[in-house]
Figure: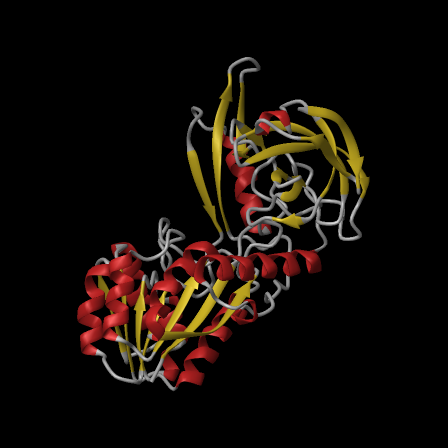
Length: 399
């Protein structure tokens, strides 16, 4: 039986016993809550006893008035009604669409604090999913340009019949409609110029997607091929991969999911031989053109699924002087690929990933039974103001 509701330590609490979670928290309840953590994904974490409530656009240490908007068995969600005690890390967002547009999650947080929170989120995921010590995750390498860095965006058209208006922009924060956006605060000026031109032409109908890209200087990249979306921090990402290769003494490289050949070509001077493999045939053609334009002759690029080519490539390049770079989609690598890598045993695996959870999952497979040791994980903030982060993991085969 529930006797009464009280406030304690700034967090809404109930006295008595509970028959079900619906008796603790109900949709529509307004509670005073303390934000105790920031979850991976960007939402603040508060608790009613052991029941977790996720609240977007909050900062750990804040006391907020919250309206409960969703209740599930293991967690609920709320929206901020008022901020009673703001965090010192809270700042004013630079984008007028922030909070409505779903592209960014952290513009209300000071950039230095964003880096600290991201490092903690990555370390917690690696400990929980992979069983790795927290210390293996290094500090996040900051982006020298936290705004106006993004060189590629995907915008959508949405026809609003009631107003005879075509909206062009990004999905709303609740993913239910499109926010009409005239400019994106995290995109490069050239990208925003293309967005303005697109808005002038007014697409013929709603439901369309448009990829807008600022081409990288000195690289051949097709319209649908992958390239890192942050030019300002790209040199830092390359420097980390090169440092890891140098430290291991690797002289041969297999570059799986190589795209247009970015990593293998940037590291070619450190190697005797390299081979890149990629399923995107257009990207492979670009990789060969990029190699020829640089006069590089110690490598090759082949088209096909990395999962299919890996066994043969690892047999061709065995031994202690071979490194493998993995840069798969955010879904990670198939289990069979990880098992093949373990069996072949290249001296070094450098795994580049934009999703720390799938990265931790895959590294756990590689490190099982002590086959590989995770030396370090170096996060790079390739996506400032958002929940996303790029990680470079350095693994070495145990002798």
